[in-house]
Length: 224
Image (cartoon, rainbow, N blue to C red; front, side, top):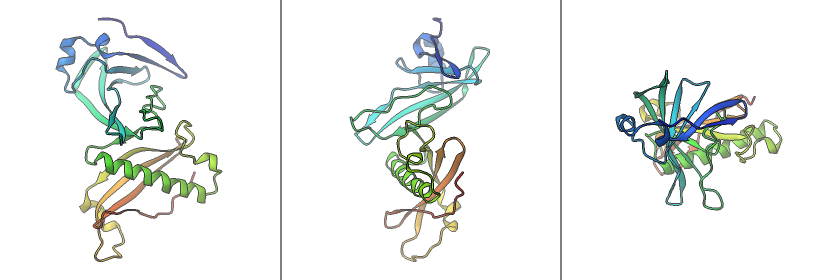
């Protein structure tokens, strides 16, 4: 087995290497997640697990998507049975390229990326992400924060981004909505996790109505 290549990053030390340099073909075949050559393995020293990342894929010009699988790392032994798969998506930039991944522990996978749960489509998640950012910016502006603090420039960790988007079972959320219009009721609910500067974390709720529109559920948030 070849040694893991070590890269020093600010404040953290992570091992980063092509997966084929770290895991044998036999071990890769035993994984519950399909590990392939070209994937990247990352382990930060302060965490008891590692993760394997696929290269971001351009999904028909709509968004970029990549898969990640978390792997238990205990005494240099792999326990694939306890692995957990995640999917992330991001907008394609103005040059038609996928955003880069940031392997620093406090930023991974980078604020341009949003975790997409398996119970929501890519199209719906990108739509909710956009609505959550716009609504979040409106809330921050209303709270009196200067414009540069709620910009959609996700390169700065102090600014706004959407960490995760997921759907909520209809029977668990529809009763919480005001059903003002009897012929246009909500049929599906969504949540987005809004993050800013690691001190502001809020859930934002949305609903898709019978006419296909998605509307933000207005609530009074306290802005940190």
